[in-house]
Image 1 (tube, rainbow, N blue to C red):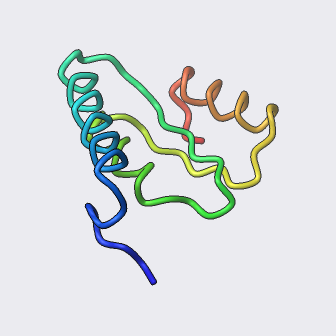
Image 2 (image 1 turned 90 degrees about the vertical axis):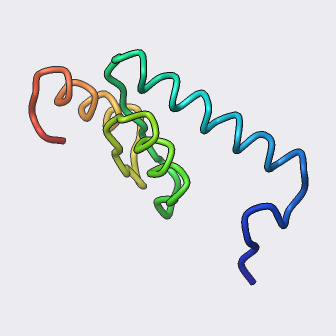
Length: 81
């Protein structure tokens, strides 16, 4: 059963809210960023944080150090990962 936002605990909800605030501040700074989701199943929360940051979102479910390095290198040189 999937819980609704706010149904877990107050501490968790404050943490999510804090992450959203930090993500918006990051976006406002104009800094480029990337969120790399290495979970086995890409998480919508990670994509939402990337969107709030105005950052690229990369789902790399089977990534190892080499895969992450290749993805970041491709982004640095303007290639698509």
